[in-house]
Amino acid sequence: MSTGSDIYYSPARQGEAIYREKASKFIGLAYPVNTEGEIRDILATVRKKFYDANHHCYAYCLGATQEVFRFNDDGEPSGSAGRPIYGQIQSKGLSDALVIVVRYFGGTKLGIPGLIKAYRTAASEALENSGKKERTITKTCTVTFGYENMNDVMRIIKAENLELLSQESGNNCKIVFRVRASREEKVLARFRRNVNIYISVDV
Image (cartoon, rainbow, N blue to C red; front, side):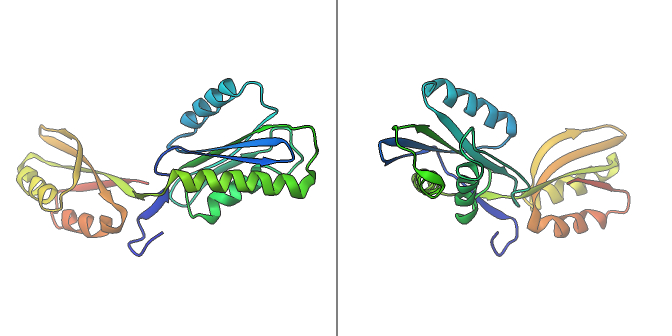
């Protein structure tokens, strides 16, 4: 994370790389992703496209602090494929990232060290080819207030350049907006100075 504490990085686009070792072919594929549902769809597509491959090993992590992650060896010896792939995502400081390495077995066993090197290299090169994109951590806030406070609330929304997600008017009004995490406390403090305003924040 950067100085502002609300920045992290993900792959900018799909990246691909090919690594060969003793007639085995390793195809590295890196993707920017947002949800586990999206990851499942990509995995299904890759397995269908490379249906004749021997292994489809992968790793992914989601969230600004990589709070959701998984790696899979898909039949390779334990720790020889998924973990080295995941290690490359970590070493490059990325999240919201999926890397799949497809292997076509060439007839010669590589041994555990050889497999680790091959999967690590294919993953690393695919990520290099995918580039890096800055992402912002945001919070979604809900402000509930009386209609008489509408002008004050909208003035703050405009002054702070907040992303308005939804708005409900009536005797009891409600506005939902998104704010950068590093600006959250400053913005909410400004709202709280209006005594008739209730605020909730989705974590």
